[in-house]
Length: 355
Image (cartoon, rainbow, N blue to C red):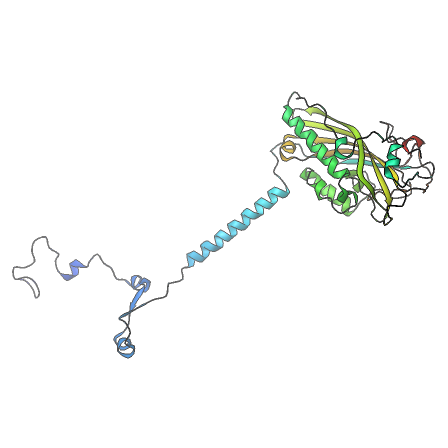
C-alpha cells in the first residue's frame, strides 16, 4: 500500500522514488548559499519595507584575483628591467673576446714663436698645409672595401663605417668639442670599455688610461671657441683581419681647427690648432652586429699648446700672438707620419700658417 501522497497504485516502475529522490542531485550546502548572488528577504523585512522578495548581494572579494594582479605587475617589472639591462649592456655571444683597456698618449706641441693669426680663418687655411684638406666628414673617406679570409665584404664595411662614425662624433661634433656632451661618442663603444670611459671624464689622469682627450677632442670653452665650423680633415682608414674572429681598423688623421678667444667677436684674430690622431679599433662579430667598437690604442699630438698646461681633461690652445717655452725635441710636425715624441714636443714651423 502506498504511503501518504503516493499514487493509489504506488510509485510507477522507473519513476523517481519520491520528493527526496527528485532533488537528490542538487546539494544546497552552506558554501553554495553564501555564493548565491540573490538573497531572500526575511518575512519581517518584507512586511516592514514592502521590498521585493529577494535582493542582490555584493560580489565577494576573491583573493586569487588580487594575487594574480600582483604577479602580473612583478612580471612586467622584471621584463622592463631585463630590457633596460639588455640595452645598456648588450649581450655578447659566449666565448666572445672581451675588450681590453684603451692605451693612450696625449702629446702637447709647443710653438717655437708667437702663434700666427688673421681675422679671416680662410686666410689662415690658405697659407697652411691644410689648404687642400677636405672639409668635415669628407676627410674620413672610406677605402676600397674587400673581403678577408673570414669576414665578408659587408662585415668589413661595417667595421670601417663604425670607425668613421666614431671619428666624426669624437672630433667634429661642436657639442663634443665644447664639452657639452659625450653621449654620442660613448654609445659607439663596447660595453666593457664604458667604465674606463666614464672614469676618464669623472677623474681624468695622466696615467695612459684615463685622459679625456685620449677618447675625443675637447677644448676648454672658457678659453676658446670655434671661429669656423668647417674643420679641415685628411687621413687614412685601413681594415685588416687579425684573427678568424677579429677585424682591426687603423685610423690616422690630421684635423685643423680655426679658433678665437672665448667671448671675442668676429673681428678678433683667429688662429689654427692642429690635432693628429692615430687610433686603432678592434671588432669581434658582436661588435659588428651591434655597431660598436673597441678602441685599443689612441695617440694624440696637438698644438700649439703650452707644455705646462694639463691636457688630460681638455685642450687649452695658445691663440694668435701667444707664445710658450718649447719643450722636447724640436720640429715635431703633426702633418708628417711617424716620429711621435713623449711628454711634450715642439711644433714645427712648417706646420704653422705663413702669414
